[in-house]
Amino acid sequence: MKFASNFTALASQRNWDKDIAVWVGSTEALRKQLPAGASAPSMEELDLLDLFNEKSLPDSDEEAAQFLHDALRRRLPSLRPSDGRRSMLIVKSVPLLIHFNLGLKEFFDWFCSDRCMVVLVLEGIPEDLRDACNVDAAVELTRTTTLSLLGFDVLLAQPNLVGARLDSFRQWKTKYAHAYRKAHRAHHDQLAQTKAEAEALTVQVRGLTRLNSVAELGPPLPATTSVAIDLAALKKQTWVCPDSVEAAVDGAKAFCQKCNWTPVTTVPSEALARLKTNVALGLNDRMQRFKDAAIHAILQQAADSHPDLKTLLEIIQAANADKLVGLLTDDLIEFLRKLLQEQNLAHVEVSLAEILDELGTVDGERIDDMVDEFAQLLRQRLKDAKAQQPPGKRVRLFLRAERPNPSASGQPQ
Image (tube, rainbow, N blue to C red; front, top):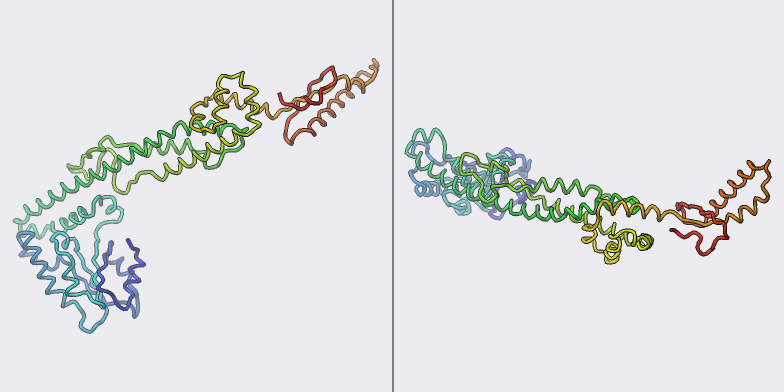
């Protein structure tokens, strides 16, 4: 499909190559795309319906086809400029050519040249409605042709044509119902497949949402914060019509009344692909953080206190995200959160004997002063212990009566 700008460029050419263009839209919109000034070609209009005499229409399609063929051979040469000027012939009621199986040979033989081109105009249908009803190109052309033949004045003057026109309509309606059901069924087959793939993401999305809630692992990727909402929205879009196999369009309704499907409604395949990507990225990110050595160490220390942790360690070592999301529960997430919080706390032993040596003898009149000095010495020990730890690490002091073991100082417990 080409855009209007392409047509403007074609119309501006000095010479054509026996071109026949198809314009989908109104004649007024076509005129707006024509070049202005010296490069503008002259224009002639030909409505194929005007070639028929309303008072003496052919009795059959075969007679009508022959009549239209002969009328074109007589009329087209008279529309062609004799002075070699560039000319454009605008043809209306184009579906008649399809209905009577005439093709375009007459236009090539009797009008088109390097100075003359033909534009076939398909108009009369709003763009949004045309897209909604157009389940098959051939069926759509037959529809417009049938409508063009159902003129009230003509049928009133020649009632013998009513039966033939009704028969044409019934034939078109049968073709439309078949084409609509076929497209409706194909759409919902794709929708069912998309729904199954979305359902398969449920466990992964639930696990990723729980992992994202563990603040100790750091902030989640921005694209993964709304995966649960995105999955819920996707499930709503993948509702499969109960009449997907055979829509009820053989009556007065042109659309399925259960789902109101039209060809402008598409399967949300892009939304599914985007969700899959975000879930995979999110799980990979959280798994990578889970494999951090410090986290692994504290889980190893606590493995005997929780029955699921031994299995969890094996899964983390194998970096198997699918097994991980199946193992995670709210209780296990809460337990892991507490372990991660404890990992940020360093336990440091402080010798009470050393502090007492610094305080010296306790005098009854100096008890308050001794308490203040004791508090000051503890603060200094805490400050020294923090200086030996990484930034942001919390420190808890343990007062021991004996001298501290330097190799054990600062080890998390």
